[in-house]
Image (cartoon, rainbow, N blue to C red; front, side, top):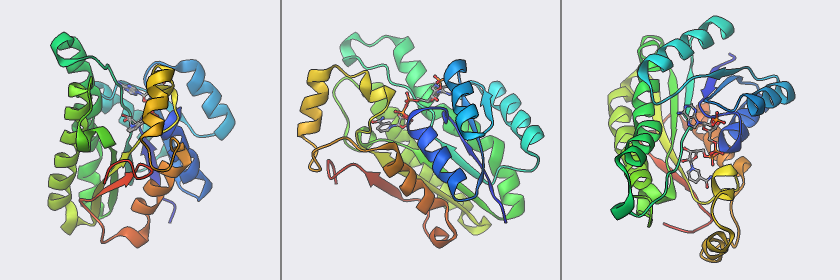
Length: 240
Ligand code: NDP
C-alpha cells in the first residue's frame, strides 16, 4: 500500500533530504514551508514533490494547510514528520521575549498543532507514524540556546506521552535528535565557532541530511512497528 507522508519544513535542509529519501522508496510525499517561495518552487520542479506554504506555529494556518494537502493528494496523512524549526540564538540575559516565543512556537507548539491535524484519522485507521525532529541540544542544553534547548527538550516529553496514548492504536511516535548537520541553519554559525564544534565531534565532521533521513526512514518502516517513544540520536558520537 502506498502511504502518504507529510514533511514540514521540507523544501530545504534536513526536511528536503527526508522528503527525497521517502519518495525514492515509494512513499507519496508532500512538504510544507513558510516563506521561501523560490526555494520551494525549485524543490518542487527538481523532485516533483508538491509543496504547500503555511506557518506551523499557527494553529489556524495548520488547519488550512493540511486541508489543502488532503485536497491535492486525496486521502489522509499516514506519516507526519515534524521537522520545521528555527533558531534565534542569544545569551539568556540578552534574550527578548520575542526570540523566546518565536522559537518555542515554531519548534514546539508546531508539534501540537500538526499532530492535532493528523492523529484523529490515524486513530480511526489504527495506523500512523509520527517522527519529531529534536536536537542534540535538547538533550544536553547549549549556550545561547535556552529557547531552542527548551523547545527541543519539550518535544521529547511530548513524543513519549503521545507514544503512550497511541501505542494501542497502531501509531508510533518517535523522535530523532540530530547533532550538527550541514544545512542553511548551521551555515549561519560563524565559521570559527563552526570549526570548534566540528573539532568536538568524534566523527570529525558534520552529518549529512541523508544520514538523518536514513534514521527517519527506519522509524516509519513496518520493521519499526514495535518501536515507539524512543529518541534516536544521529550525532557522530558527540553526545550519548
Ligand atoms: P533549515 O533552516 O535549513 O530549514 C528549515 C525549514 O523549516 C525550511 O523549509 C523553512 O521554510 C521551514 N520553516 C521554518 N519556520 C517555519 C514555520 N514557522 N512554518 C513552516 N515552515 C517553517 O533547517 P534544518 O534543515 O537545518 O533543520 C531542520 C530541523 O532539524 C529543525 O527542526 C532543526 O531545529 C533541526 N535540527 C537541525 C540541526 C542542524 O544541524 N541543521 C541539528 C539538530 C536539529 P522556509 O524555507 O520557508 O523558511
